[in-house]
Length: 154
Length: 165
View 1 (cartoon, chains in turn brown, red):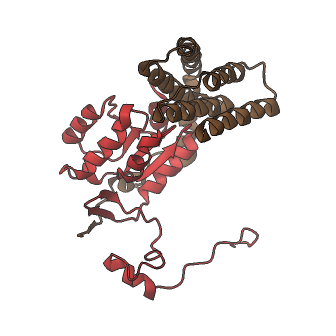
View 2: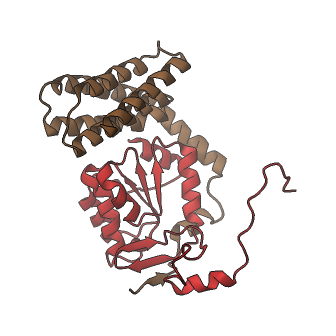
View 3: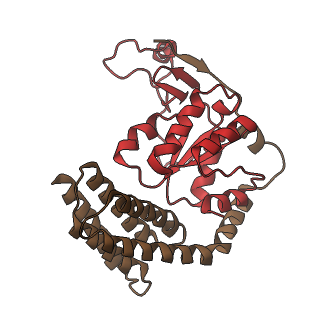
């Protein structure tokens, strides 16, 4: 077996270490500022995605079509993207857990409505800022993970 | 504007190319010299990983050697191996924050790993530390493995209680 080893020029390195430009602190502050500018827009988009997840989930109760399951997975993945960035880590974790569950079920060509339903309920609960008790939220996440593990080992 | 674009714009990135399909991304790689490629791992059917692997195996210098970061949320079971072997410098897990992303960019900018090409893999060396071949595998498969035996033993980890001053 032949291995070719190269040491190509790192153009990124040249740009980053060139004199001038922003300091690390300034870059972080500006990036955070840009995220804050988009907060309302993103939270609106997040709410729409959560509603779509609930609606699709109900459609999937009886006879889930592959396309619906795939869309559910994509939407959960998008919720995972946004929730963590905007200070809702538990919602992101619940979305991750739903992704894990759907992927696992799809890989084994199975469907488990109760497990999906409990995730949908978990998302609803965690999306509501009224349910803000950190311990209770963590309890929900732990429960969802446990459901995932059980489904995976069945 | 998506979250990644907002963060990179804050870092001072000007004129980014934003592509929504792997095919368009490859076209851009043919048109312009890129300093950093950031792929969203959630593109359908592992397209992001296929794109990175195709870029690494292409003849598009200098872009085939450009640093590549994949930003991934949940990686489906059937794509884990693809993600590992696509040739990206880094896979960053979501949710991303400006701090973690900038740390990874700075890390990639200081990257000292060699770029290796072999039958099953093209990209930065997957060995982050050159500690020699795994135990029990003999002399190793690379010429550089032999040099490790003669090298000094690895530095002991820093004691967090000990002052570095």
